[in-house]
Image (cartoon, rainbow, N blue to C red; front, side, top):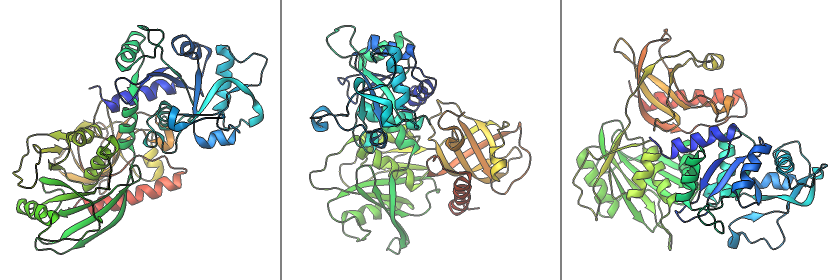
Length: 481
């Protein structure tokens, strides 16, 4: 099924191969752009951008790379007005004038070369660098930020060439989303939106920072309190959980407060009332969002709520008072939404409740590249289709073996970015903690119970091994025998 994950992964493959992709804006009327890898810029790819683009070839760059190459902001640049902070334009020093597709490809490759120095360029020139905002698309929903984020996720140099896509219906205008998607299909190009990039980063990364976690007694028994802070929005959340998150269908109730989000429990306030109704079900949680004065609900807010639900670890919650956009984001990041589970809830004007389930993944164990054995963590590997909506990351779960027995497993889903960036084959790797038999060719049924963390590119094997060891410890604590 074509969704944000599929569109982004298709774009990553194309960019890694040096092919152009089409990027649409965050609204249907926003300008569309053509992107291509600066590191792999060729005469053909840049000629394509010049032919169908506005003629202005830009280079989306991280701020650190702009500083390293001595690229100050253009005089009079106003990010608040233009949405993008352009630097002085450049050409690579060479025999050409700098304006040809060949010359601009040379300039782009040099901008993407970590060994380049400021002296390698003349100023002004025919390539216009654009400084990406800190935080990427979470700092600004612009084409430069989306382009740098994509190249970073792809495991390539983060500099990316881009140009606004000119409308074929009105050559005096820039193509909108509908026309850009038609253009992409007509030319056999992948396409995606800036919001797709933000959604993919929510799926693949962890942006909720745990501020505290402890357990306290209440009239309903032990209540586990966990505080979070979003490094995207700065918003704070507290979850109050009763019972085990693996006990089956569980209600999750969303509330908002303007006061301090510290975990104070009272039988009479809105949290206490909601928690009492959760307790009647036997298990579940109340999610409290701190509402700051004059704050607006945005796509990033819905991303926060989706991550909080994922962090709660419930396998099949019924969601109460969560906005539809938040439930959609949960589905996009790999939480399979289902309307089958409902529970009457008397508090507030709650919308129709929804729940999510994590389906079992069934596949045949295939031979890997022995990376797990090399690191001391043997894994059973299953090929995973790119279209599979399960979120990349590290999970705690169980595997059903061919003889019907089960084994606790730390399960990694992704492309092994430490070794292959984001261009590797997407695999499910299950490290069965108390099993050392031979499973090659066997059919394995994998159940994902708790999402633990996103995929991370580690600087060394030693850091990766330490993280894997921590994953094993956390898996044992989360999955009871």
